[in-house]
Every structure is written in C-alpha cells, then in structure tokens.
Length: 292
Image (spheres, rainbow, N blue to C red):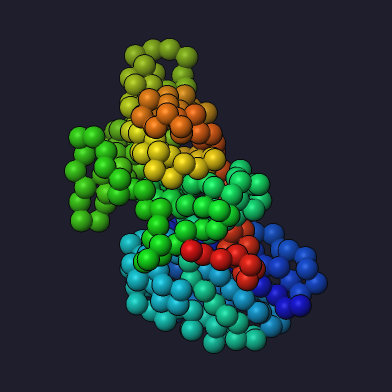
C-alpha cells in the first residue's frame, strides 16, 4: 500500500490530509494560500507525506477539468495551468493527480464522515464570500458536463440582478452580502452578534436584517430541494458556525417555498467544518468513488 493525499485549496488557505502506507491518517494541516503558481506547487509538494504517493485529489474553488483549472476567480493565476501534471512531476512515485470542485469534495467528506453520513441523496450549500454547492444522487457526486454542477449562487433571487461574475442568489445571500448589511467597517459576524443581543433598537434592526438575509438563502434552498429532492441539505462555509442564529427564518423560508414533498427536508450545518474539503478529497482518492 502506498500513501494518498487529499488537498483543499481555498481562497485563503490550503488544507491537506494523507493516508499513509500503513493505513493511518495524518491530522488535517493548514497553510496560507500562496500568491503565485510556483509557490502553490511548492506548498502542495511540501504537504505530501514522505515516500511514494499513489494518488492525489485537489479541490479547487471554481470550475476545473480533472487536470487543468479553467476558472478559479479567487486564484485567477491558476486558470489554464497544467496543475495535475506539474504536481505529479514534483512528487515521489509520480502519482495520479485529479482536480475537483471544492464544494463537491466537501460534500463527499460530509457524506462519508460528517453530517450526511449514511445518506445517498444529499445537497451541500456552501455560504462564504460567495454561494456554491454540490449534489449527491444515488451515492455519487454529480459533476455535470463542465464539472460545475451545484453552482447554486447562480439561482435567481427576488429583486436582485445577476452580474457577469456573480449570480443573484450569491449577491443576496452570501457572506459578503451579510457584510454589506452590517454596514461600513463591520462584518457579518458583527451583525449576528447584534441580533443575538437581548434587546434594544440595534438588536431589533440587526434581527430583521439577519432574518431577511436568511429568508433569501432559504428561498434558494427551497428551489434546490424542490428540483433535486435530497434527503438532507448540509449548509457549509464560514457562516455555518452561526447557524443557530438564523436557522428558524431560513427553515421557515424553505417550508414556505419548497414543493409539498420537500418542504420539510432536513437543513443542518456541516459537521466537519473547514476540514470537509480535505477529508472529502482524501475520500475521492478511493477508486470506488465515481463522479457522474
């Protein structure tokens, strides 16, 4: 048995976990995301375990082929680079390197070890600086014709017009949208803290703003649930840690907007947190995990 490596490249950090030749697993480690392609190759090569590596899966935050990234907005210097071949050449054993969408590997992680454990039909909605997602049907991740299935940020949202680079739901219900609602010089986490306060004018205003944001997200989830009929919707990304602060208005919007068969779908926060992508990428090195 040789080692395998799972990597999650995000907009701000790179996380990795390996299964070693003896079957043991390393802890998930994190590094700051590099600012150039050569630096990224150095970081990824440095995250590999000693000795030969058989397989590597790298999750990327955008549209990617299995060997060459196509559109990675947060790391545009990756677009068109032969990342899989270049990384394989840097590692002992010249492993098979496969690139995947980050939300798709995160859903695989949650399905194999996290909040969607034991489910075969699940959806992940990732809410961070943007809104992304992934789909699992029949126990398999749905990649789609271009590898971008689950780009839920491009769903319509009432009163919001999409731009060339950002969909309407992303503009209405992302973490960046919540930052805007918090006001100049403040973050969405500040708005959540205000909404959790016991009383006062500021608390009530923050509560209304947070509820409106959650309702917009809930309407998007209602559409996803109605179309895909999942057993569970897993909410991932930085804002899942504050899920309790907006769970009720979000779930109310799902109940109000989804089809009769799906309006009571379970909507839960991710269990693996920031480790989901790396763990899912490691799971994806198993040849039995097949994308459709």
